[in-house]
Image 1 (cartoon, rainbow over the protein chains, first blue to last red):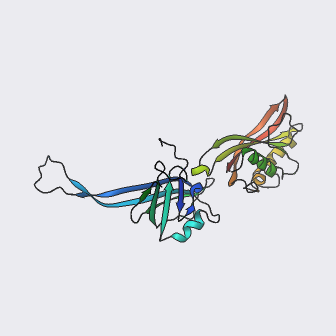
Image 2 (cartoon, chains in turn purple, red):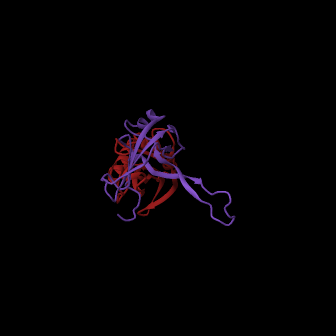
Image 3 (cartoon, rainbow over the protein chains, first blue to last red):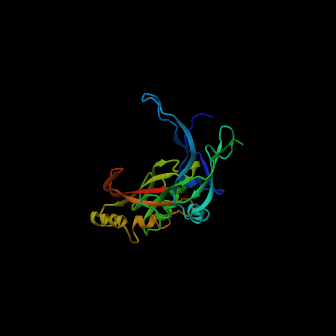
Length: 138
Length: 134
């Protein structure tokens, strides 16, 4: 697979395909930077660090949809629960060149009502993950 | 996902609910006013992932005869009204899914109003901008 234009992401939440209501998805993982520089180090020396606790977030930008089995019906009942997000970058067939990323998230934010006159109703959420984000190629 | 032809036809069908207004979902060679003509203007593809949503811009041109200038302009005024039985906005938005083939639509504004000449015949015309999400 080569570089690609992001048009065919497939995104599910607890198995519900919300792809057609999403226009942006971001999974971000980072680790704490833990200082290991000690006293007595020369002022011109480099500081030293090691990796600490790893954390991830999933950010999703939705167009709101109140239809059955769509955005509101899926998310509204999940507040303060753990949900599973699966993202496939290029269609449903998972492979070495289309890896799926699975994140288990605390669904701790939701904006059921959001709108500007004349525009599509939209909202964004950023959910912290619990545990590792896993990558699969099969 | 609806085709552009289906959307044009759907918009024309909604316009046809205005009594006395002829409609055309294609650009006619000859016009017989009063008539509303539906034309696509632009498409913004891929509003969501995996071909989930596109945004279409349409133009609706309503043309009235101006043999009698005052009555012609009054007729156009009625089409431009935000409400009422002759309102283009009310008629087009009377079924915002066009029978279930699109997600939503909105008549966002009147983009022009004035005289036009077709085949050397002067008419009065108003153009409306319509956004369709499908």
